[in-house]
Image (cartoon, rainbow, N blue to C red; front, side):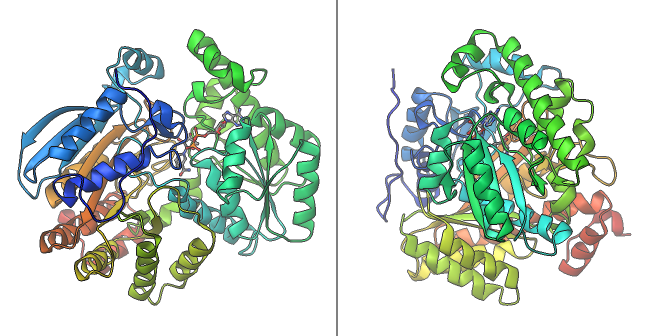
Length: 551
Ligand code: NAD
């Protein structure tokens, strides 16, 4: 039987597979499981509760073996983290096709998923865990930074200076919150039950300090708020308990959100349970544990509603905590909005979303060169320049060096083509992998998150992400994935991902031009169809064909 072991992707220009088109997915699978990147690599868990990169270590070994020998006209099929077939296709076809955690509607519940998982038949792929394009906490940093910037613009005159944010969950994604707030000049208190998660964020530069107790933490952040100073402070505690206590104490908190792993009730620690007891109790009686977790979420969300009643800006940060709290008996759970309708939807209407790239060389100088290139490519975009400069100053790379920035329709392919040219000319020392989160404008159906409150009521229509995946497959992406349940949990979302390898060849350029145009194009298409005016403008200005407009 294969055993858990530390994994690290190869660096440099020497191939371990037969071409860069297979070396790309191979290094990215390994990078997802790098102990510097993954939250619990020994269990193949990358982030987001139990989001995994491969079903088990035997499956991992078989994927590595297959990718190492795969030919340039073959395609590997991966079913929920297990490689199940290799087929002869052609050079334009993806080298890997992935389907993770998909279940037929009536069976799409956590208990049924867990039953099947225990039988070894499936795994939870989250979004970028099972599709091998997770880049550590930076992956969510820009989106989180943008969200807090939007909060600042909406409520606080364009800056978070002088404000105090309260949040929970310092895991793989949630750990970006403290840095995103301080990048917007605010003070923030973050609560996590697991001290090791908070320490990791301090070590990686995402959190300024860890307080010894709640009183000390409150004193530190209040002082920073008063002095209008950016500061992030972590405190160990249960968010349900701490949020309730801070509300009772009337601590002057301006913004409240949460990124505990609420989407999976077994990954949310109920009050009265210690971190040590957590997994044994959850395994022993998942139904009872779920009930206790939901009751605690109900308490936490009740406190969040209380903060809103007291005038704070409160939002659900995409972890389904409102839905779980409602199941736990909180009747006012949906009194506050999700972050997408509140702040992100206008960006989605332009096909904008979390575009990202990774230097397969492992050399930070390659990312520095792409940073310069991207700023030069969009000289009028001051917002982008500011973000890249801040990211260069503050982001500590985890695993292979990577960068993220939000680009839209008719922008992403320009960046991709430029990177491909830089690989061809030798300006970059090795190929670049270009991908995105599944949380994107055209690739997801998720009524509690990305598609909450769609203008035409189409929140739960899941044809869109499937069309997105099919189009990316037809356009030349290097690997394409279709997942269920990412972000908000089983039964609540369907989403797709694509990644393309810029290896410097003319063929890669042709594929990049299509994939990186068509992929965000589906986002504009989806929002045109739902009746968003901004999407209609973008479609007309940037030449997206909409058959229903043609006579
Ligand atoms: P993670 O599993 O890595 O981290 C979750 C953290 O929550 C852990 O550190 C855990 O100790 C802590 N936690 C659990 N119960 C707690 C409690 N009662 N009180 C305080 N802390 C508690 O997950 P992640 O990758 O950070 O993702 C967090 C959530 O955000 C997930 O639900 C995920 O699906 C969602 N998510 C949101 C976005 C977004 O764009 N907003 C993107 C990806 C994921």
